[in-house]
Length: 311
Image (tube, rainbow, N blue to C red):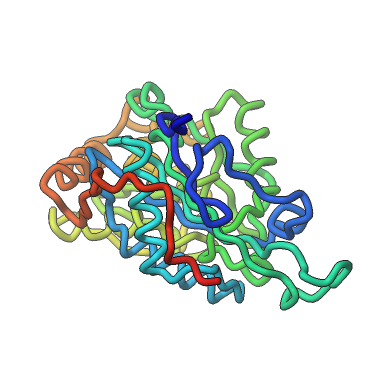
């Protein structure tokens, strides 16, 4: 019987399977200790966006956590390509994950005794903030829970330490907002659950300088500002800056540039997305269509075997 990859394809334990069949052991330290890193790249209209940049960041994260997957970075890129090809998806969310794995020696508490595990999967496109919410501008809540300190968990390494972010989401939803943004313990703006934040003040685009993942979409927006002649910089921001912003938007691989129309009680643009935000959003997707930083998917790759994984 031919496997059905229409809802997504995954690479796990050295073979390609439908995404819903990929799994890790309950004894894997990635599950029991959140000892794992990952990266996410998107495919739009049949092409990866900034694939090499995502692979480079994934490699930095792996080194930061002293993880060594059983495939090279070039092989991981090939695996990601094959997952998308098997799924046939033209718009896709593609994740590459490395967990610590299970100790080879039962009962060992040494990370060095674990065999690290690689999983890659491609599933249908996901928008972190739904399209209808983006249309009217998202409503954000400034969470009371502080972001996990950078000295404890390096925010530039993608991770699943979401306890603070999840608490922030509950607060936001209880307050009737769509999602949250978190401050650090000193009161500086960091990021939200799965996205970077930007404000626009007096025509200048600003994004936080601390406590954040160095997002690929964030980088793209800063590059777009340069191309469009919009002043932009990375700077320390506080809740007062959010409360006085002319505009605000969020950025993420799973959604691109997503306008915000309200932060707490502060309503921007009469409750609608602002002009700079919409200009950047439009330019971001136009650049996609023009082939900016794109790697076309080779949909002819259909084999479900892969010989590149190290033994």
